[in-house]
Length: 169
Image 1 (cartoon, rainbow, N blue to C red):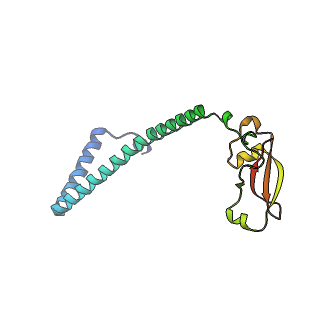
Image 2: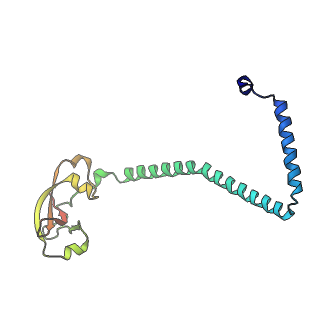
C-alpha cells in the first residue's frame, strides 16, 4: 500500500480525472442560473485587480533604480561641494585683523532663547575641545579636532552654559 502512495500517478490518468472534475463543476455552475450582470461585475473586478497588481509591480521595479539614481546624484553633489568649498578654507574663529577687541563676534545660543532671559548670566572665559564644537554642529577641521579653542561663555548661576562665542588664540 505504501509503495502505491509513493509512486507518481500517470499523467494521462491525472488529466482524465481533472477533466471529469471540471466537467462536473461546469455542469453545477450552469444549473445555478447566475445573471449575466454578476459575471460582468466579476470580470470587471478581476480586470481592476489585475491592473492594480501590474501598476504595483511596475512601481516596485523602478524603486531600486530611482533610489540608486538619487544616491548617486546626492553623492556627486556632495563631492562637488567639497571640491568647490574645501573645509581647509573654513576658519574656526574670526581673523584677528578683521575683528578688533571692540568688535567681538556675537554669542551663539546653546539653549532656547527663553532660558537666556531667566536670571543674570555671567561671562566666563575658558578653553573647550574643538571636538565639542563639532558636536554642536560647527565646522571643525580634522587637523584641530584634538586641540583646545578659547571661548567666552555665558553661564547661569549653576554654571550651565547658555551661549558662547569663539575667541582668536
